[in-house]
Amino acid sequence: MAHGRSPRHVRKRSSAQNPEEADGKIRVQKILAAAGLASRRGSEDLIRSGRVMVNGRKAKLGDCANAVEDEVRVDGERIRRERPRYWMLHKPTGVVTTVSDPHGRKTVMHLLPDGVGSIHPVGRLDRDSSGLLLLTNDGDLTQKLLHPSHQSEKDYRVLVKGEIDAEHISRLEKGVYLEDGRTAPAQVAQVRADPDNGTTSFVLTLTEGRKRQIRRMMLALGRPVKKLVRTRMGPLSLGRLAAGMARPLRAEEVRRLKTYADRLPTTRRGASKRRPGNRAQRSARPARS
Image (cartoon, rainbow, N blue to C red; front, side, top):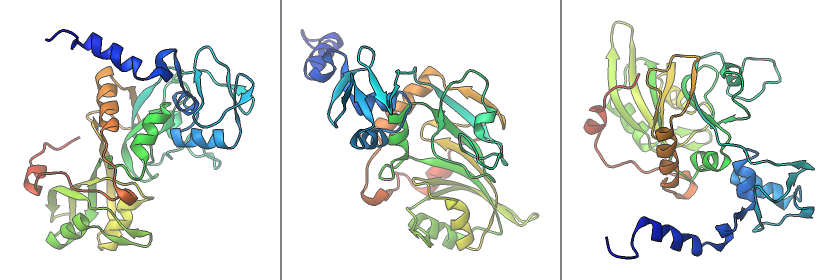
């Protein structure tokens, strides 16, 4: 390797080009997001509303602070940078995806072990659906994964009443018209009909997350959903994690998840584009449990 091109030299030069972080100072909204208080955009809204103080002075967008040395407060309460936490949960049916529920229903937080700390679900699964749910206190990551203009992929194993034919698949892949607009193109794979039970199962890949979207899409096609399980979120797979069980992400999973989030493409109005590869290639992928 040529002189001056080692990773060590590259890191030094990168730090010099970013003076805002050279003395440990970062933007205030990033401190709030890292503390799990809100997403980056939500943190900016807190600053705009005048609720954030840094060392006794009202913060403005663009202000920087040291997360350890400076005193950052929101509504008078001091914010302390928390260690980022990342958990995977296999949400069972009958459980709501919220931190708390005013009706006293069981939430996903009841399924986490004691001592996990303050984390929140990334997105939602409706009460009648099950599968992979990510929970974290990393507001910045949450913002990247949920932003409507980003194409973050999620796989669902869907069981519907009736058969799925070429016309149904074509409509799903082009987008289905719903009362709140046309859906983004989806991908369909691993179609398996069960004539004895009068049902069909398949894997559906979405890049958006409207309320009860898959159920509404399939109802519009005359194929009501009987069972819905999310098996993948970006690089994370549910694997053999049993329903109702949770585990912390492994270091390699966290690394891959952050890399994936940083590389998410952006489209206008959150529209998706299909990934390269035909349906046969997608169908050749091994089934996820």
